[in-house]
Length: 291
Image (cartoon, helix red, strand yellow):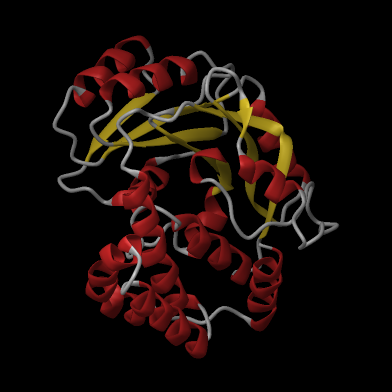
């Protein structure tokens, strides 16, 4: 029996972790198609995927000639031929039964565009702190959704309806990594799709030891907060976020490292500016009051 969900895995120079992820994904039943999108790796990534493909013809490989960041997932979604797509990073995978549960909910709720899973971290299955934030979302719960409404999620723990993802335009190529989920979440919501958290759908994340530093991730998050504001939030909010970043750069290393990359990407963000509807902005402000 074929699976109606494709798993898209984005990777870069983590061949060993990717091998572990692929071994878990190919053990799932029904076995889902897996599309590996390689952000221009220079290690053994191609060989690892090739070895997996020899035992599972549903594993395919797309190598990019550049590092497209989180937006590389869009390439994998376009290659998928299934109505649903689940995302994994090269250090995360889905628990047995998770994808069929998601498929059932998508069929039951036709306005549902994205499901955020419960993420368990490491060999001891620690709860990711984001789980509690989503479970206790101040946005409440829509009658057209099987779980608490959200406007944020963990990319490697999300399943999307491919049609909704395409309508929202996918992950932004301005953002890259770190916080790329917010712009997709607001674009899905602006297009009229429901997003929710479902704790019975589980994925596992074993963070790679070759991850970027905490400082780098924090800098990227600061950069992407400002860029997302310019693309989707009211103009006064975008100006205020930019001013705060510039002011913080005087004393904070992460903000200082974020300032120049933000300015470099700002023209692209402004060209893609499309303010979200008022109801989505209202929900974003509600979330910020509780954060």
